Amino acid sequence: MSSLCGWVPAHLGAAGHAESVVAAMGRALTVHSGQSWAAFHLEGVTIGVVDLPSGDRGGKRSAQRAAEPAVAGVGRHYLWMAGEAYASDGWIEVESAEQSRTLAFRQRLLSALLDHGPQAIDRLDGAFQIALWDGEERRLTLLNDRFGSLPLYLGSSRDGLAFAGGVRGVLMAPGIDAAPDPEALREAVSFGGFRLAGRTNVVGVEMVAGGSMVVLQDGDLSQRRTVRWPNLSNVQKGNSPDDRAERIEQAHALWRQAVARRLSGADHPGQTLSGGLDSRAIMAEAVAQGARWTAVTYGLEGCDDALYARQAAQAAGAAWKFVPLYEEQPPDWLDRRSVHIQATDGLIQLTDLMHMECLPALRQLDLHLSGYLGDMVCGNTFDAVRDGASLLAALPFSGSPLGWTVERAQNWARDQLSRLAGTPGYFTMFDHKLPQAIHRIFQAYLPWMRLRTPFLDYQLFAFFAGFDGATRIDLYHRMLQASYPSLFTIPEQTTGLPILTARWRVQAERARRWSARKAHPWLSRIGVDLPPRIRAYFDEETHWRKPDARRRIEGVILAPDSLCCDILGREAVTAAVEGWLDRGIGPVQVLAALYVYEVYHRDLPSFLSARGQG
Image (cartoon, rainbow, N blue to C red):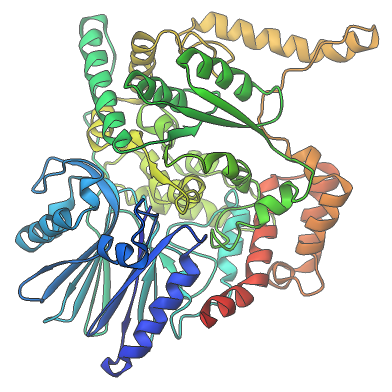
């Protein structure tokens, strides 16, 4: 996917310097040699565009043409767009995702914004960043889609304003403070390894929330949300037989439409396929629409995810590949995760970097359809968030002595919920956990392939948001089983049974599994060898505690010049590290956050220096 960056110098006399700044941004943002790069310099602003190869052999000239801005008003207004759009029920016609990446579309988009203002994109369904420059007013406006599907970061200094699709890009601009943010570390060890709201790991750079407008004019910077989460005080409850069939038909039609829009133009589409429902739903519909599908599953050999994903891929007639985690041959699993720390700006903790271990298998795809947020859009995940305690449990709040106190966390949670004004409590997760934790996992694939998320289709999202959580999940399950029966009679990972299984059978299966776990040691003693069920697809407890891995992890976090120890106290950090490695005290995400924060800041100066030299 493409990404924008830019530099607005505080003084017009630094024109040549602005071009060199943005060139350095491009070098920092480019992850591999297959990406294209183009830059555009105007009086007062320089914009860069990083993109995937266009498929032709035009080289730099082709990249320049593909990223060319729309222009209006005899050179007054210029518009760049990164990403793509899939549909709109507003003022901008969208023919296809491919067409939305053309200059003709950018020209229509510019006209709509000039005629109607930022509300012109309120109903533009897509994953995009927009930069609009008014040369007469010397005003830069930045806009992004409502979910923040492409990350966007800002930094400013007395020298000017920088923005980019990665923290590292912003840090290439002069005067941006790259000093470690101690509060970022405290938040990370408090909340599952991630930070809150727009915080990054450095003092001088912040992340822009989804659905935002940033305006820079005359040295003044303003930022506001242009899209608000819906007030759902009158959601429909219940899924009675009288209206069930019609609702299932509506849901399926919207789902078909969402997948079709996002399959457009792909030659080698596919996905990461788990043992759950959402990725399977994508595969079911993509194959139904004739896509030649590739599914990649990663995890432990014999785990539930691998078992159910393989069965689903076979039922769909899709190609399936399994990638085992924790491979020991060089580069081993720890190296394969750590190599992505700078490219992800140190914002993905070490546990979640496991998702990058399958990248070599995914690189055969030109399109990845992600099941991101399916469990929230069509299910009831996080619906229990209604007060401060349930919000902290959902994040989750670790209670680690290295992080926030319980009192501070409770006060923060109550404050966040008080701001919702009628919007359900689970939308707090859209502002904190989802963009800072889960979303980043999938965004990490952006430099290698186009990434699209059918569950974030605006019409589908609005349809399911009109029901309460129990109705949503019942409707979703019934739609899946009615529309794709061969794939949804296969068990799903959560229960080990197919969806819509009677509750008493689910309870009976849980009791059977509990009994089997209790009986397993006794059966082993009498010579009955039954392989244990592998519920989780990962096993950090075993692999992090192996002598070589432990030595390397401890060596980073507890190094003599450890930044984590300087911020949090060596005695406290040592107790946390040894407590988990020796006795399993606390969540592994605390160690995962410490490790990445330390490696990120240790290597950041040399990374920036190398990119700045050209």
